Length: 314
View 1 (tube, rainbow, N blue to C red):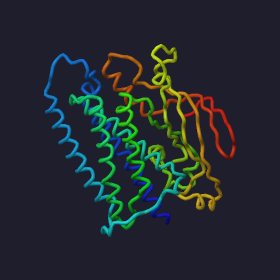
View 2 (cartoon, rainbow, N blue to C red):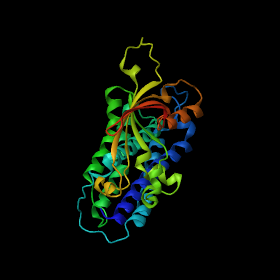
View 3 (cartoon, rainbow, N blue to C red):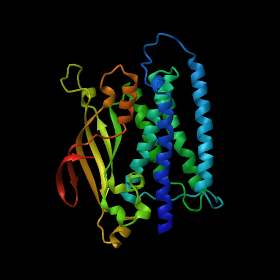
View 4 (tube, one colour):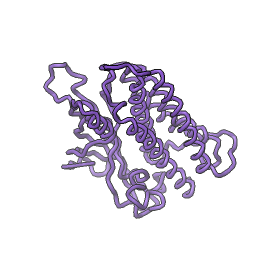
């Protein structure tokens, strides 16, 4: 991929995640007390049908406006015939994990909103799964008509996997037992290509894949017996990261003197939503914190250095 095209696509991926998660995060905070209430215990019966109608209309209007504005900003050249672009070899596939996490978080946040409208957990999970998919799909389709990009089957598969992971758990278990999470730390690699990896901290946590780690945080107590002494809030997390990628493609990173490699992690984590509290604001804080993997002692394995232990890794 040419450097300019590489940079533009990288910028779009970062902006896409930031805009979509940011929009839904603000939407959640605006309904702070409503979305986090226990929907199984209601002392009054508001008009839940009205809430659902208003929520769907609001989502449609805001999202349509957002997509229209972003399409004007992103797609500067006239659209062409629909075509595909295979980017599955780029960034050691960590960008696909990022797509999955984004779509999952959209579904997770949306589900809270749907519960606020009176839907059951399973119905909310189904609606949220569709929302997570719908929020991403139009952008991928527009990419297919853009001469600068192209429809990525890998991106689309990841966009489906995220909401599917959320919805399937509620259909199977009635709760979340496996949760994708995110962590980030600064790396010096951004100095090599600031235009690609970001010049400021805000840019780097979106653009520098070398500092990003994606996790699957599993709650062991949910798979055990109710009499288990294992803390219900304690999780075990498996992570994936990359290093020394200063270009989208591995050979181009090697040309610049770097040897890209994959990193695998095993660590402890906290499921904040399993910490019991009656405080609605604290429930919201816990809900938002569950997007992030907490800093914790971590065992790393990579093909270059073998096993490494981090006393505290984020």
